Length: 400
Image (cartoon, rainbow, N blue to C red; front, side, top):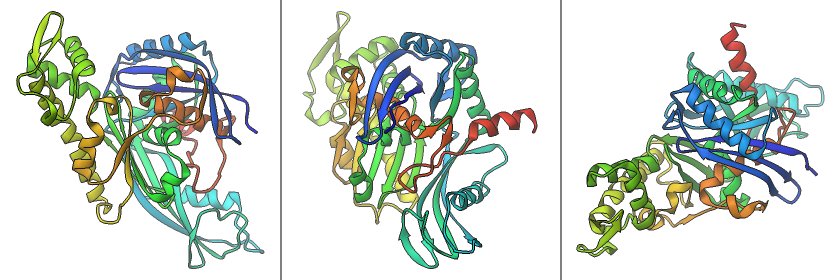
């Protein structure tokens, strides 16, 4: 049973969340012990653009939850993220043909060398399944015997410079980054059950700066994407369309916003700061942007051959999923049932964080619990193989 303390920092475009928790891996529960949240500065669409401002925001969140120089897991997103599916094959030359953890690590290392640009760094190699001497459908190969072993995997990469800037912003505050985790995978860790992944599901995490997508089929990760549109874009559209300050637009969006203009009376008015605004026009602005988000998701699925084979539901999470009408519009555009999800199995300070806007943060604690002193444990296809990218990035910049 894992009961050690774990630490996570969600460095988002609109907010920084720092969490200290304890994870009971046997029961699948996360106990939140302390929580700190501050507005985010120095980031744009998930990418650090001002190191000092970002570091100050991270430090404020860490102070708020009493976090010091502990080993932390940090979430990452941004338009620099890319991904692809690959498969690698190696011959098992052991005498008894038994597949070991070390052999699986060799397969993952081989996958890291495939199709990665010189300015990119692999963030995740996520096994989707294994083929042993021609036998398909193997999920847990360790301990089985085979001469020819093929691993099918989903590889996620990011720009070296963007990863390095994120590490700087966090480690400037005294924290020790042990893992960098793609944010939709962290959200999936918090919101999805094994049955969801087995049945097939598209997770759409609508954050402040980006919308992140993760698709699972038959229990395996088959597609990820980062769309450079988030809650900030919705608010900016309202501010521009109504010719009002951003802060006023945010209040209008949160208090009266809906993406279903058809349900709003064309002459209805809403009031903020002693001024009245046309509610129907407000909803049209928001609906147009939400439609664009789901169109992007649809295009991303189609380009990766998932439109015909994919039959699972859509799960919305993140703060942007709370906008009225998002599930209905998602169903209209994507053509499959949709629901909104919050983190599952949260104890302790759960009233604060058991909400969709904290899915990534809670998921980071789950990822932290799966490491031992910063080194990932291999548990087959159900757990992502992260790789030690932190050390790799640092050695790259030292020229080693």
